[in-house]
Image (cartoon, rainbow, N blue to C red; front, side):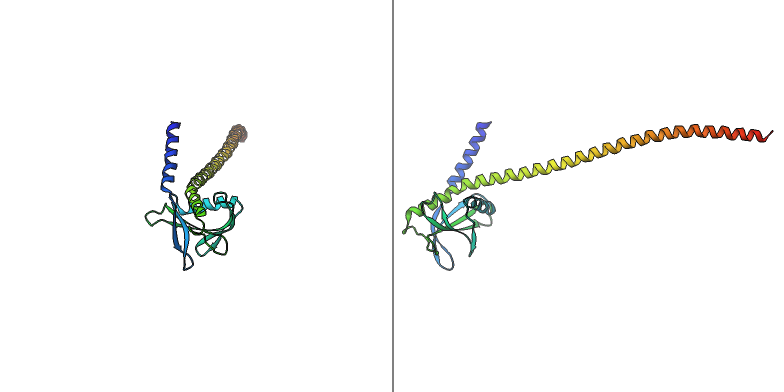
Length: 213
């Protein structure tokens, strides 16, 4: 069974990797054509965006919105090489029908929107492609962690509900016990009242008998 599961997981990551082929192309950025790296990832936009923000956030980088892109300033990533770069990312649904596939666009700048081209630094562009292609693994791991956390929240919620039911049951048991004690006391009071009633009836009959003499 475990071997079967490992095979499925392996095939899943293989398929993701096979699908994930980054491309170098020019895109429209601030009304001008700029060099970019584009890759499709088999996850919804929110998941991919969250995974990237989580990855860079753990390295101390915080994104800033810039004309439809999220820009991370002076980023140092071993995957890209020894330099520091301004990285621009855009996340878009591949299409209306393919809403669970996200097209990731990345621009690499050496500063002041001086974007790197294939001719100016082919090695960096190649590293950028590899970075986006490998990003799918990080997205998969992030998505799994999100599912685990969501399920942990569900478990916690259900545990809280169970405790509430258990507390209610304890309260009910206490009320039942109290009612049983009240019923028992009521029965004692009834028995005492029966005796008192008989006593008073006897006295009543005794008084009535005296009247006739």
